[in-house]
Length: 464
Image (cartoon, rainbow, N blue to C red):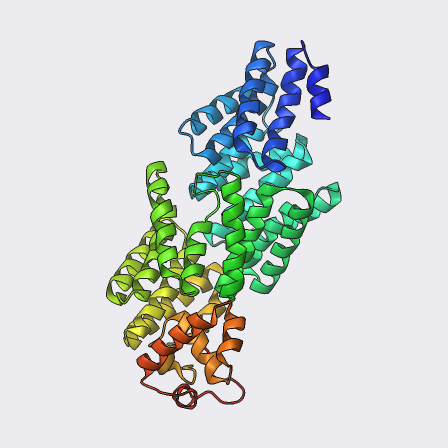
């Protein structure tokens, strides 16, 4: 169809510009090719400018800026500013808003969250009165993501549900709205509902060939899986994100924060070297692009690597610093997440008071934010004075990966069964079990079960 359209547009610059503008979207969503999308946008903008169509030129420049951001090009903001000037000169604000919306999204990517919220709140009433419903939905998507990131959990859920209602009323694909609900539920609702919405979005995006929202929804799912202890599922899901984002040739790590999540999943699956390689790969890119809060996420993941590598003091110091810097940026959920990690590290150092203090600080952060699922996580971390699970002292000497294996073996699983459950080779299970025996000073499965005080109901559980 596009081939025929380009043939029909031969000799008509305005018509060719319009076809190319539509091709920019097709190339990135369906073809996963931001380079071709950008090239089509550049040509469309030039043709639209040559015939004096400022509205189409603004749209094409907006798409060019979008692809520049994906590809990590330095001119993205300059191009977007040019598009915004054309858009505002062409028609009243609220009628055409692509450049304005992308400006708010760039602020979201950069964690300039107050700026993003103010831009959206100023634009939304105008769009609702005289703009297309698609723009209203896009603004609500972005606003929900902003509020979830800020820890304004109730507001995030309200905006997400409203965006879904408008999406269904307009008969549009629910994939993006389900992704937004997954983010909001993962902040202030329920991790189970977040996973459910993310899976729906994955299915819809897959069926529709939408590579952009496929990455986003897989990221939302993998993050929840990691937070709830499904580390093998998280690794599989986040590997898909990595593959998809590399196919999309996405350079800017701020657009989707999957690197830190995958690094943690690798670490939890006893692949510390791979985790450190990933962090070393993305760190210089984030540094070059000035993505400050991306670097904070990488620091959190690196602190976990330090702890797993036998450097708990360095890990604790880095987690304290990272938590404080997250707080300074107003990223309260990430601040609390660092504090939970700090509690785990301190417990392994046998600093029970410090671990308890970190855990209580995290709970206070989550309670103020209304982050119900995150608040429940603080009850799952060993170290609360009123709730120390059986086997907690023994498990605190093990890494998370070792603790999961110890629990399975202590409950009677064979090496083969444990390997299948944890998606490991039998050889890896044997090597890891040897380390567990050495750390706990036991010589048999029966002694391991006794040390962990694991009964037939599987009472003791590893820290998540």
